[in-house]
Structure formats: C-alpha cells, structure tokens
Length: 182
Image (cartoon, rainbow, N blue to C red):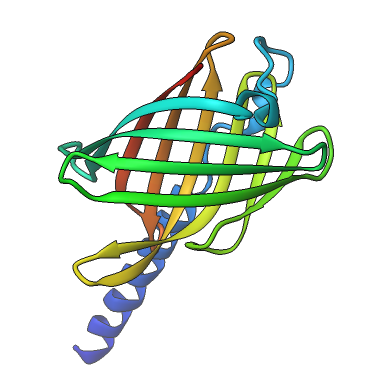
C-alpha cells in the first residue's frame, strides 16, 4: 500500500513537471513575424513621449487594477533609456527606468532597478518580445514574477502590449496595454 502511494506521488510530480514545462514554451515565436509590417523598431517607437493605458487581470481573467502611464525614451545610438511613470487606479504611483541595449538588428538586453538580472528582447516585423523576471510588491513583500511580454505595432502611433505573468510556471496574471505615441 505504501508503494502505491509513493508511485502515485511520483506520477503526480512528473505530470506537474510536464504541464509546467509545456506552459513555458509559447507556441508563438518572434521569428513568426519577420516578414510582416509595420516594422517595430523599439528604440525608435519608444523615443520621445508615449502614453499608455492598461488593465491587469488575475489568472481567472478578472480585472484587478487599471493604470495610465507616461513613457519617455532617449536613444543615443546604442542604448535606449526609457523612463516610465505608472498611475494606478488605487492611487499608487510607480516609476521604472529601463536601459535597453541593442545587440544587433533583432536582439536586445535590458535592465531596470526592479528587474532580476537581464531582460532579453527579440524584434521581428511588428513584434517585440521581452522576457524578464520582475520584483513585484505584493502584501508587503517582493515576489519574483516572470514576464512574457509582447508588443505589437499597429501603425505609426499605436502599439498593443500583452504580457503573461507566471510564478513557478503557472500563470498568475495578464496585462494588456495600449500605447499611443505623441
């Protein structure tokens, strides 16, 4: 009887591992967009002033917070410094400053004060994918949340951002943002 419980426990652990391993692999890849238009060159699009509006949804889809944001980027030919100011609907104001380095035509690396390590970015056609771990304040402590962040350029002024947030491979929230370039 004890052996059956052990086998069931091991089977459950293996199943959970397989499920979480599969959930990390997005069926969508940045290269899928390489021949599509309009081309999103992130350092050009985010240079200057950009306004944003967004909603945060919990894992069941319920909207839990909303925000508007002001972004201001400066490109020096090698790196983009992007200052973000988020105004959340509950009164919280959050500032973040990204430094995003262009590695080559399609690859980027970024850092910010609340990002663990480096963010990795990929740009193809109208899509920009950014992968990173963010320290998110929750109930007085900081949780490490993995972001799978996609920005899709719609036209010269508008881009749409969808981010899936996971912890231990499980989706904990989603973020939808609309950007409008001044």
